[in-house]
Image 1: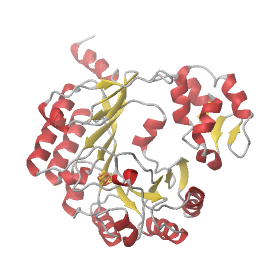
Image 2: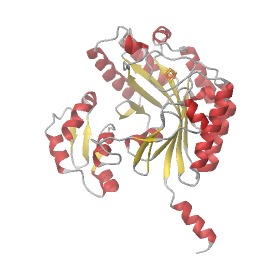
Image 3: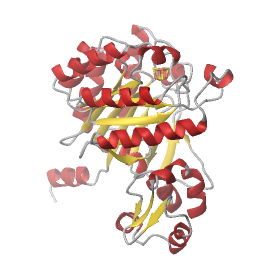
Image 4: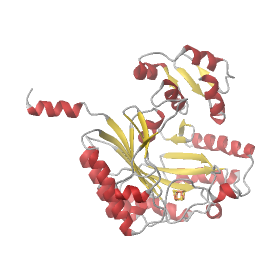
Amino acid sequence: MDKNERKQNFYKALPTVGLYIHVPFCVSKCPYCDFYSVPSDEETKEQYVQAVLRELNKRKDTFFVDTLYFGGGTPSLLGPQNLYILTDTVRQWFCKDTWECTLEANPAEDLEDVFAAFAQAGGNRVSMGLQVADDTLLQKLGRRHTVAQAEKAVKDLQKQGIHRYSFDLMLGIPDQTERHIQNSVAFCQEMGAEHVSSYLLKLEPNTPFGIKPPALPSEDQTVEFYLQTCSLLEEKGYLQYEISNFAKAGQQSLHNLKYWDAKDVVGIGPAAHSFFNGKRTFYPRDLQSFLLGTLQEEEETNVACPAGSLEEYGMLRLRLTEGITQEGMQKRFGKPIPKGWIENAQKLPPNLCVTDEKGIRLTRDGFLVSNTILARIM
Ligand code: SF4
């Protein structure tokens, strides 16, 4: 074997992963948010880009990337030049051929130049935190953007030829009614979004909403909102593929699917998590140490459900409408779904869980009580 062949074989053997880059900057903190983010200035953003490049450089020639996801925080705050540098570098260092490259963006900023730079560097998908298509409710949520700004952001995206974009919707927010749900779903459709993520507002401890909760819709009402959102989205051609995610045909988030399929994802930046080489690791929430290069990744330890185990795989897969399939189980572990899981699933009411020759999957009602069901099956 000559040197060239050896080199080719070396590259062939490298795994392909999803890459997540956390951008821990926000202009202000939304009162419900527990994600790691802090205010920043231009100098800090530039230092951050250099720190991410340093971490990426350490990983050169250890994997290929077929999905890149900039999450946060507010990645669009990095600005056109910084985003261009990061996206283009990842593409050059790690990308073999095609990829899905997603940017989380906040429509409160003027995003025209950001989208132009992102598209030029190879970015092809954007996820926007719309939350609700109503300015009064957006204010109650402490969001800085308006519905008109979200509309403008879509136009800016389309100008750059980025046609894959997703909106986040939030359910169970103060003073929300069925009318807001209808308007928000209609807005997603009218704006041409190909993907919608729909999350319940959670009161996280140590956030202003967690410490002093606002008046929220009742639990029953929020369940109704969830079911209503699922049906309305489905009517408009968005098919549910995960508890909180809906997409037009073929437009699922390939990056996020990796998490639910327990595939390798490498995370870079404070608060970013990885699953790679059978280990789950994370960077602690410490921007200054990350900038200095002294932040060490730590290993996640979950005795009940070890990284890469059958149980972990099953729990993640049951978030998907496809559920745990016999085919997927054979491919991943070389064996069928454990008999015990099937027997346990068969004991559950059929309106919550389905078992057949394909495998085990939860119904929409089942998703509402998924934690209880998972504990019963496994
Ligand atoms: S913009 Fe997003 S990440 Fe930043 S504080 Fe608000 S919800 Fe959290």
